[in-house]
Image (cartoon, rainbow, N blue to C red):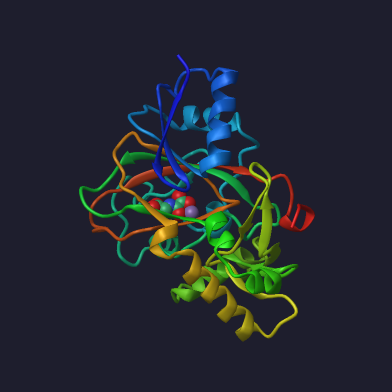
Length: 294
Ligand code: OGA
Ligand code: MN
């Protein structure tokens, strides 16, 4: 039986059913999933049963798996998950207990509440993120997604013209700084230096133009920092109007894939004294956006 794709948002989200992601992936299903991602940008699978190895194996069918940046910037703590290919998106410590309010990893993780796209702060950024739900709270903790191709299409011709050729500097420290989280050592900072990325890029899977911005984007190269920041703030505000946004309400066993090249996302609040255990595997893009089509 082949997969079934059911759109759940008019622009950019679909559910995929009739597939067990823990089983070996037939090439035809792989290709059909990739086509759905290229069309919709966010795809949701329910009732899956994945362990870390199976999640990594599934992701590997779609590209090289990125190693998590968390271990580069939190060198002084014990990490809960053994594999460097899994990003720990939980609020749990290495012993499985809920993180204390002032725990360093919790403060770092809170930056997921800002609109962003994964690993835009790496020279070769993230492509597909695959987030799997082990434990979810009863209330809150949704993930919201914004459709950056639709947001680009809706810009005026004059704005599209103004954005042509612009390059933003992205840095993970910029998103943390916005929340006043600045307790990183020089060594940690040096491991993830700022990188340039195009503000508008062509999404390779659909050949549509898309905005490529995030809370990691600091300013526009060649312009005063303040002007660049205001421009990026205005673009994020434009792109996150309700008509471009979809909220995913998690159920245990959900796997959600999003294409970082043409979406932004953010976590919504929940009672962080309750457990939420989500784990993410992300594939790497083919090159810096500067080496890809504008
Ligand atoms: C992520 C992320 C949001 C969430 O996994 O990259 O930003 O809702 N997650 O946990
Ligand atoms: Mn993220």
